[in-house]
Image 1 (tube, rainbow, N blue to C red):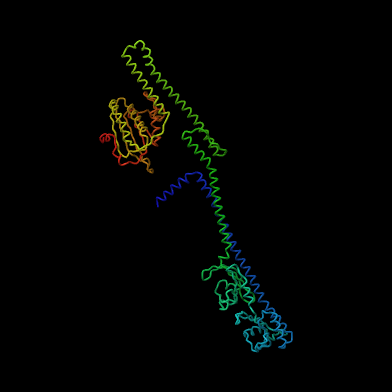
Image 2 (cartoon, helix red, strand yellow; image 1 turned 180 degrees about the vertical axis):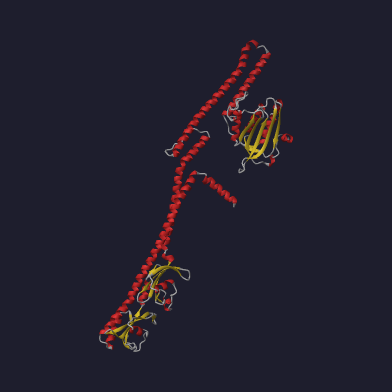
Length: 607
C-alpha cells in the first residue's frame, strides 16, 4: 500500500505539481468550480422546493374543485326535496294528489330511487313506488330529527345490487308547522362516477369517506362494500375535522404518497386525492437530473476554460524556461518574441537583454582567451626560436662539428616536441568529442596512472601511498578521459613537490545526501607540496587560471570539463606550505561480483 502511495505521489508530482500551467489550472478550477457548484446546488434546492409546493398546490386545487362538485351533486337532491315539501305544504293534501307529485318527481329526477311521505306518527301517506307495501321500511331515526326542524341525512347503504344510496328527510310545513315528513332514497352512483373519473397518471386516485371515516366511494369497490374505515389515518382525521390541505405521508407498507383533502359542507364527509410521490414528483426528478447535467457541463466548461487560461498565462513562462535551458546549453542566438506589456513581458524583455549581453561577454571572453593564448604561444615560439636561430646562424661555420650537429639536432627535436605538446593542449580545450561510455573500474584507472608514474616518483624522491577503502568502485564513463583527469592531477601534485614529498591517493564510497539513494566514488589526491595561493584558488579551474612555467593553465580546466560531463564534481583545498588536496566525485554503478577483487597490485600488497 505504501509503495502504491509513493508511485501515485511521484506520478502526481512529475505530471502535475511541477507544471506551472497545471497549478494555475487547478487554482482557476477551484476558484470557478466552487461558486458554480454552490450556485447550482442552491438553485437545485430552490427549484425542488418550488416544484414540491407547486405539486401540492395543484393537488389541493383539484381536490377543492372535486369537493365542490360532490357538494353540488348532494345539495341538488336536498334542494329539490325541500321544494317538493313546500309544494306539498300548500297543495291538496290528499294521498292521491301527493302520490301523483312524488311519482312525477321520481320519473323526472332519476337520482331519487324512492320518494315517500309520512305523517307525524310514521305512517305512510304516499309513495313514488306504486307497488310498494303500505308498511315500507324507512329509517326511524329520521322522524325525531325532522320534528326538531332539522334535515336528516342517513349513512350510506347499499341495495342488493350493490348500488350505494342514502336517505334524506325534510319536514312538510303548513302554516309554519310540521304537518308531515317527506323522505327520499338518493342514488349515489354519481359519486362513484366522479371518483372513478378523476385520475392523475397511473397512481393518482380520489375516494370519499363519510363523517365516521367509512369509505363511500373508491376505485376499489370491494373496499367500499366491506365498509372499510380509514379514520385513524393522518389525512382522514384532518379532513373529518373540517380542514383543507395537502401533505406528504407514508402508509404502513412504507409507500410514500401525496394526499390532498377537502371536507364536503353540510354532510361532514371528506374527499381525498392520493398519488405516489415517485410519480407526482417525476417532473421534479427529471428537472433535477437536467440540473445536474447543467452543473456537470458547467464544471467541464469551467475546467476547460481554466486549462485554456492557464496555458495562456503559463506559455510565456514556459517559453522563457525553454529559452533559458537553451542559453544554459550555450545557445545564445535568437530571442523570445512576445507581444505583452505586463510584468511578464517586461521580464522577457529583460531576459532577452541579459542574453544579448551574455553573448557579447562570451564573445569578448573568447577573444580575450584567444589573445591571451596567442600571446603565450608567441612568447613560447619566440623563446624556442632564439636557440634555433643561433644554431642556424652558426651552422655554416660549424657544419663539420659533429658535437655541434648532435646538440643542434637534440635542441630542434626537443623544441618541436614542446610545440606539439602545447598545440595538443590547445586542441584538447577548444574541441571536445563525445564520451565513450562504458563500465569503468576506478581502482584500475587510478592504479594504472600510479604504476605509470612510479619511475617519476622515484626520480623526484616522492613517497606515495594508495588506499582503497571499498572495492565497489565502478562508474559509467569514458576510460581514457577519466585517466586523463587523474594523470593531470598526479602530474600537478608532482610538480608541486620539486624537492620531494609525500603523495597519498585514497578511494572510498560516500553517500551524497541522506535523502538520496545515489552513492559517489570519492578519489582524493593529497600532496605535501608548496600549496596554492588563495587568490588563485577561485580561478583554479578556469582556462589559464593556473598558469605554470611549464604550461599554459589548461590541464585543470580540461579535467573539470571531463568530470562534469560524467555528472561528477571536482574540488580543491590547499594551504601554503602544507600541501594541496584534489577531490573527484563520480556516480557509482552497481558492482558485479566477478569484478569485485580487481585492484592495483592488490592495492600495493594491502598497503
